[in-house]
Length: 360
Image 1: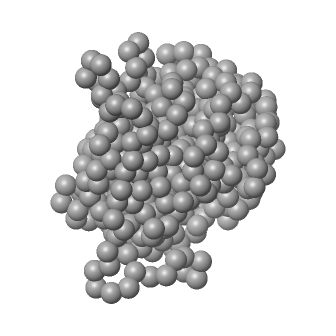
Image 2: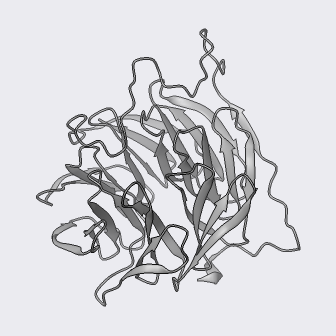
Image 3: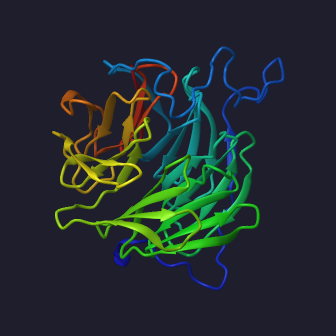
């Protein structure tokens, strides 16, 4: 695996690139003095696991294309609870925040010398962390674009997640098979979880608001950890399992929806026994070799995933049959997909053609 990664950081203390940020919109505050990251008036937030709030529907067509990244876009994330801002991680090394309502880019954050692999908002959206193939993690202030911290353990970070109970702690899955937890205030590594045999792909917090975490890796194993204890408490490994590069929590918090590389989406119980739900298997797309994101509609009825041919597919979660398949992106996979938490049938997808599409 190491021969595919960018060259090692040389020297004793290598320097990260100088970060810059650009605001692309007139004023950073409006006439009432509200910041540009505040949700528009009248948009109420929805809690992430509230399935009763509104019924969702499968989108029918692409209504808008956000363009501006010079290379592909690898991951997109929506602002927590309200979803009025969209954060994108580009293979050109920059992150951008877009306004969903005004349909334009608001701020660009440039601070990496190679592609950004993952981005994540913290629990209230005021900060976000970006993880890049240049082996650095950067914590940004969403509003001002300042870098609040730069972290590295000289390994490539593949996935980053904020700890649900404490915004100052984020966990990173790395190319040296470890999962490390950083305290962003001190910049120190507070805990290492070292049990995987290959680079770590996903980290998902489960059970009563995230006291346990489920991680998956290229070694085709899924491990369950108690928070802050460096030994796994459960081991999910079956000789027929494939590697699972993406795991998403179902909004009911009862299931984990996993992208398996044998072109299936598998469902595991989240909590208790973590057993495979053999009847719930979603097929018909082609993801082999790509970590295509899965998103589940906020009411839990539909599952949406990109695929390697640039298509985007929708399934019914209960009946597990495919409902729709659209062509979304050219020149590679539709790698990212997110479902809007408030608007019932709005989905965003991104691909390696550098376009972010909004579907309704």
